[in-house]
Every structure is written in structure tokens, then in C-alpha cells.
Amino acid sequence: MSPRSGQPADAIVVLARNSDIQGDRYSTAIRMVEQGRAAKLLIMGRVQGVKVFEQLQQRQLPADGLLSAVCVRTTKQEAYSAAAALGPRGLHKIILITDPPHMLRAWLSFKSLGFTVVPHIEPIPQWVAHHERSFLAIREYFGLLSYAALGRFQPPPPNSLVQPKPAIAEDLPPDSCFINAEQIQQSISPG
Image 1 (cartoon, one colour):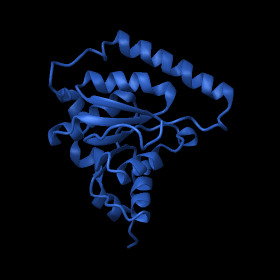
Image 2 (tube, rainbow, N blue to C red):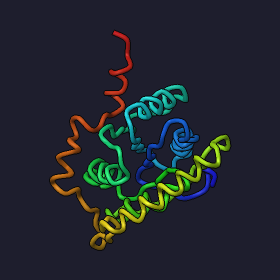
Image 3 (cartoon, one colour):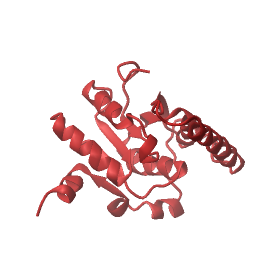
Image 4 (cartoon, rainbow, N blue to C red):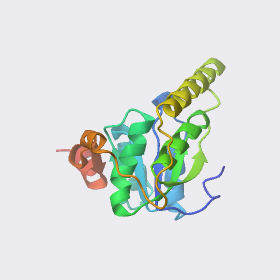
């Protein structure tokens, strides 16, 4: 699906993947910002957030809508961090960018927290070997079964964005688990 197709949203959420096989998801998100599909970007991962910040700067696009979640490792944590970061700002409709094997579990995870999710599948690069693609598919299948068995796909109350439970929210403190464009700029500026 082209980044030109589709509808606007409150925010674009880009999920992380092993850096070797993440594809072009960050450039896709930036093109969506250029096209006006959303002004807010939530990027999972510190290194990825810096990469997106630098690309925004190179393209002379505003970076003030950029936020990077730096305390996430799982799809569940990504979904809860999005709820913690976007929910209080009233941002409920998201464009969710990830790869094909991950999309169903990610979509269900974000949907279960009350997000309106516009999925955007970013292909796995062609050079990724067949056995690695198979491993990703099997891993996601087991992840999907696990999340379903644990009840992580329960629908939210109507018309509400579920806020993270206190125990989870404690694992995502805003002052240490999220960095904004200004903080990224400070971290990469010399001196």
C-alpha cells in the first residue's frame, strides 16, 4: 500500500523490528507526514527516534510532533506506551506501521486499548531469506496465540481509550520512557 493512499489520522505509530529487517517503515512514516496524513509521530525505540529526527531535519520538516518511546520491547509495551503518550493528548486514531507478520497481533493489541487503527503494512525487504521470513511468521503465530490466551485482545469499553493499568504505567514514566524532538536534538548536538 502506498503511503499516499488512505486516510488521515491523529498520529502515526511506527513499531520496531530488528534493525536488519525493518524495511523502509521510517521513510514511509515521514512521507505520510509530508503528505499531511498526521502531524504527530510516535516511534518505538531511541535509535529509531534519532534516525527519524535526522530525516525530518534533512527534509526540512517540523520535528515538534515527534515522540520516541524508549522503554519498549514487546508489542504489548508498544501499545501501552502509545496509550500513555497519545491518550492524554486526545489522539485516538492512528496509522499503525509494521511488517506483514506482525500486523495482526499489533492491530489487535492497539484496538483492544481503544485506538481506531488504520493499518499500513511495510513489506519485509526482498533480500531477507526465506527461512528468516518463516521464522518471523511462526514467531508471530505463537505471539498471537499467547496474547489471545492471556486475554490481551479484549475489546475496550465503547468510545474510550483505555489508560494503562497503574503497574504498567509505572513501567512507562513519561520523564524517562519518552523523548521528544527537543531532547533528541540535545542528545545528538555536539558539546
